[in-house]
Image (cartoon, rainbow over all chains, first blue to last red; front, side, top):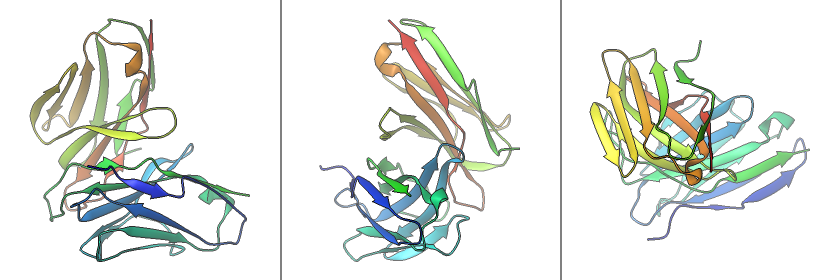
Length: 116
Length: 109
């Protein structure tokens, strides 16, 4: 089975622009989670989707949004980019989702976003 | 204070040594994950556990729910084990994965 894929792998944007990142989960996986990793804050949870519905959201401003499509692929969008948004953005897929039921997560290679 | 604390932050050891990385957390949890991140960023999930002990090859993970503590052990360490090891927890009633700051492990041949 192919692993989790993320596109693009590297991206350079300017402050004020917006960006869309894409994540394709492992075939058959229906849950996708997004994470931000920075040297200062480490790994932080952004959001989690299952069956096209956002199930959980981290403590990020409204400039960060996401969605999941019927084929389980997911996108996240960051509007009005700030220098502090420079980070590695990781997505992870799991086979399913359930309240208080946890499934193994499989991570993609990440998208490294640089905001100048 | 972070909800998840790892120790040590950095660890350098000789090839073949037994390695222990510790994770303490301050909230009740449903599950704990151990992750491995190599240079370049890729993350691999090593273990997900909610009680007891799990073993995979040379890696062993244990958790003590009452003491809110988990350990990751590596037996017969090898240079290819050099990576950052990250502990993450799922707090009760809040399903958001919360991460420790990681332990950078370097194994010298």
